[in-house]
Length: 227
Image (cartoon, rainbow, N blue to C red; front, side):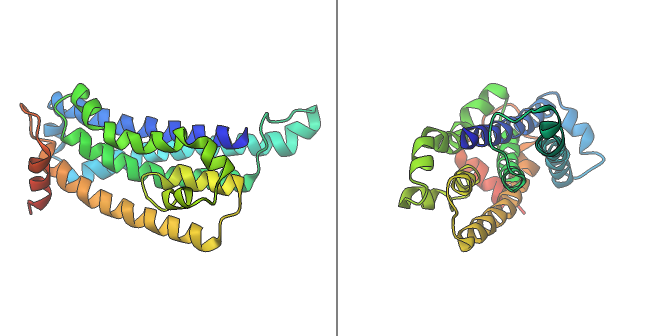
């Protein structure tokens, strides 16, 4: 039960905030609002500001959840005989918080790039499907994650950046993965976030002002090469 609740929270919040970034970029692009903004800030600063702003909102939400769980477990619970419907430890809540931050920045950067490359929200939904699948796959394999946390497939998925936030969190909740697994997972995620931010920044710089047509993959890759 605890694993299911934590995994669902992580999945829903990463997806929700990522899509909010993408829709925000598309809305400002189609309404020409972004052209006014770019007269005051660079495209890179605009993208980073969007991601950081929404990221802080997400972190605040998680901080509230952690605080509520702590108060209920340590104060209100013993006083009024209340208990959370799932077993919650502060250590597990902190891991949930860590993987939300990492997953959020990775997926939000990707959604920012997709939003800049989209002509409208419908187009965004179409081109975001491959990215969304990497969030859905761990949910489909949830039974395997719980029953076989140390299987080869699960271990590999816990190192692959687009699936690792959910998969590694499930391994932590179900088993006790080696410390080097945790270090390697977080290291790969941080490196992937940096790479995705650089990639997204280049796509955002060109794509945010491109309107009137739906760019193909080859064209988007050419944007990345523009200096």
